[in-house]
Image (cartoon, rainbow, N blue to C red; front, side, top):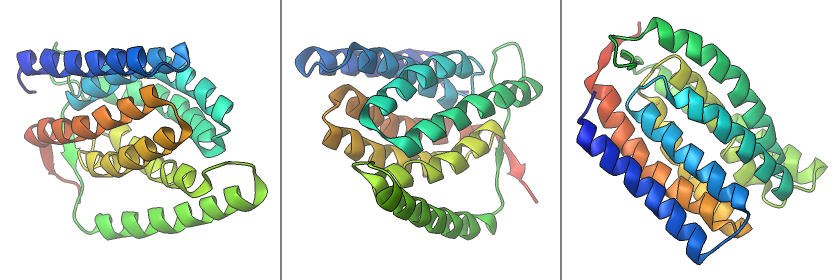
Amino acid sequence: MGNRKYFWIFLSVGIVVQCITYFYMPNSPWSLVSGLFGICSVVLAARGNILTYLFGFAQVGTYTYLCVVERFYAEIALNVFYFITMIYGVYVWRKRLTDDSLQIQTRRLSNYLAPVLVLGVLLVSLIVGWILKHYTDDPQPYLDAFTTVPAIVAQILMVLAFREQWYIWMVVDVLAFVMWLRAGDYCMAAQYLFWCANCVYGYVQWDRCAERPLR
């Protein structure tokens, strides 16, 4: 699933960017720690490597703490969801391992599901954003909602090994970059900016190893 040398270069670039961002624009040390765990997790996910869950659990814990500090309530709920689905994801991915490399066989969705997913995500995101705006003190309710609801769908697709998750993650990561930039946490913003590039890398890798579309 891709070239090992490119994998290590890509991972190293992400780690270096995260460290440089923290050095020049320091915030909470937990932002750096969470960012580093996140970089390792998503690059491994892009390769379909089951070790992504090892770093993923660590990232969820540290990132949840940062969301509590910033009062991003939808993001907090999302990370509880991540934790639960990652437990199930380990089970699903273990069944789809192709060999001793810890990498999985990926799948494709059929085209008719795409518009249904898009409309559903937009509608639910608007509803959640409205609730956060009127019933909480969330400083960025709609950005919080539009980085949470699509991420739930993307996480489900990732756990089930569908390549189309990467389209959704790209949207989520762009919006999350803006959200954390506005919050003044540049380590988290840098993490999501790198994750945008990882979405392209991940889609290419998963497309090469995808089975025929699900009917």
